Length: 488
Image (cartoon, rainbow, N blue to C red; front, side, top):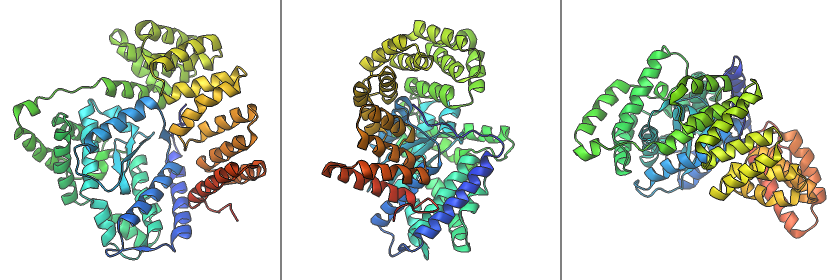
């Protein structure tokens, strides 16, 4: 199970820019009447509302990855840093955006987004942790909240569009995209005003370094992350390729004072070693499953005789996604299994492949082995549930799919397949309920309207009607960002 990626191909950025502009118009039309955010009125309640709407908009418009191995890894890095921070007014929620931006972003009310480009381009976990610590320092120092609080005459809804424009601009490398989101003189001014100042960046560097060290990471992580970004910017000619550097000026100066900070730390702290096993697993999986398959195949083949078991798995996954002879993928999965056949990730991905080629007996053996080692893996549960349904046993599949739904509630693909399985099992109300949710999370208002009517007609009990009310609330939440509301 994964969310299809947003490919960087000619016209993709223009289409996303057009979509972003449409989003802004929808946001401003629907939300403009809400309370104004000002120095006197922007409190924690306002920040929570802004954060929730910001999160909803980003999730509606950006391709997210939902993979236990990757999401749990990044969440673990964030949690490790959060533990050493002062108490914060909001819990932190982490999401992975499938985009090649070398970036991370912590929005209002503790919503953290990490881009896959950051995972791919860094060499060590401490570097990812350094960037995350920097972003969390912006949160703990309340740089966004303070700036929003000082602004006047902008609604929460307008601020959502401004913030989302800034993030989408970073993600695509199109520096004009944020301006497209900020329609109107007030919003355009706000977009410029919300950018972090040099003082903000310096404070985030200093505080972020404190968090990084306190969390037990090598202090070199933040410096080396900045060095990687500087090199990327140089190699890319300073163009529109999205990098963390593009929105954080004065990097050379900041690297210099951070290096001075490191020299002042105790020798044992300076000499901390990187622990990268979990990082490398996440990195290989991101490259193999979520980047261009041909490029991924070339990358893993270039490693040659030095390939680890994990690299062999990466090659197999990439081959299974490419248009090459599928027999090559089979041979590659067999090699990965021979090398690392007790690894639940190898078992899971091999099971996924054999399910794809409809070798159900082999897929079942592999997926069951993966689940025995890692019962909470959402992808293993998803694939095993799908397999049971394809074998004609939808009732047995439901328990596995329900685990996935509870863990990943806002994924259209999961909801659609779960709805189909429930229909096979004869649970008509919950089948239509989940098909409606699928349309909601795929931002398809016409399909929402169609499936909602079916759901209403199938609701027979008080429990059904309570679930229907929750569904309608979810629709209202998302419909704020659609051009037309679908409910009367």
